[in-house]
Length: 555
Image 1: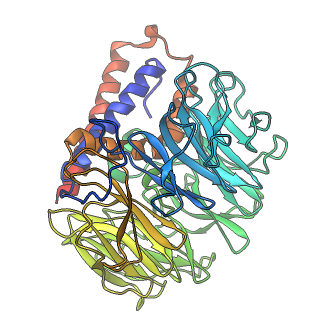
Image 2 (image 1 turned 60 degrees about the vertical axis):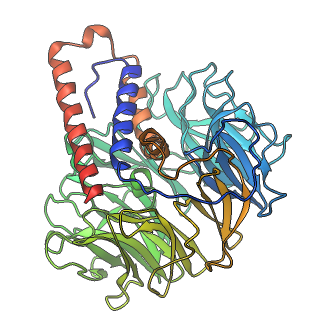
Image 3 (image 1 turned 30 degrees about the vertical axis):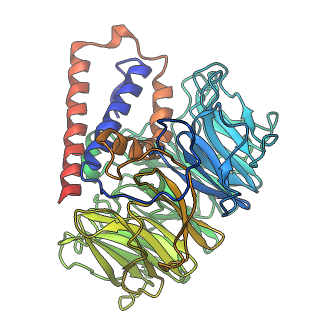
């Protein structure tokens, strides 16, 4: 990351500008097309659908956002209504589910962005705790359920960004441990539950600097340093000049926890731990020497899905051995049992250089994933064997996203040409991908609710909540939730708004943490001409990387 040379608020604005630039460029070729309005329930004149739609399931309710409002549904038209008591809150972002309770971050205008909860009723909707009093917000990130509580990173304005937990009550929302005493806080990274503990790393995120691997049982005394690693830079999308990857992507398997890390001798490789220092070891140096087998160390933070998955009693992941390029691999947790699944595209370029394992999703006894093929994006499936790894559809420049399993079926959106995205399906056996219904254009917010796929689709009349069983006849509107006629080829700034929150969500955990560590150490007197030039050069490198990504998306 950049050296501490300017105030935190300036850095935060620069990050937001870069993310917005990235969003706009990535979405420049967004799909187009209309949808059909069935019923008008948005009676506010001139109010249109919210492009930042998201959806999540908690208990027996499906929650989603429309026009900045929080809604819930039981799957029927009558049971699809705004959540009472949320009309005055802004910026709802879904974070986690604990039991039947939905947790999200939002602001009510009088407080900053803080943690809220709802059970779908007026009485059950409230702010959990004002962790950082005032309107600044506590920067809550990466909520993880563990032993009946939620763990997350937050800044209370006194301790800096540190590890917190909540049982859903104000008094039960407390600081777990203060790793770095003082207001600078800690740069926590990749908080995950694994086996009998939580795992996370702490690092400056600067390439080559130390990165500490921790485990915790949820108490200060039970938070222990397991081992020191190194923050590893890679060639991933050109950000190696300013950003490195500490240990991350923790995955429980066979009584151990597996993760991706670099010890400074090898690059990013597959490691495992039993929760002790002596039991923390390298599984295999897949790409021998200093080269990295992985492009980054946390798929959830960077791309929204884990890099390490488990199918048929084995780990499944993408790795680069320096010979075959980035290809699918499998492991039983031993060096001898870690092997290449299939050389999908022979040669050192590999089959997934454009995806880096992005979208790896378990469905039944298989995984499905997009792959950047020579002719464009493809959807593949694999059961962990060479014969069972093959493509199920080709989609040109508009790849299959998001990927949502429902039983043995897999739903996703894609557009083989330059037209609208459609709703597609395949299955765990690898059936050839097919369009679900020609009446659905540009679906978004796909979610599995009670064994049925629900989603939102924009159109001339606005957004509607839909559901499908995978057949044209079984694809129908549940309820219309937007009134104004809206083209499904929205303006560029709308398309940017649709992706920017996702990008922020995946990066704010470490960006906000790092900025908090810099807070208090940046003063106007530090901004020398030399430091300003270095910052300008690094920002230029980031923007050039963003441009390269946009070009890849348009190919």
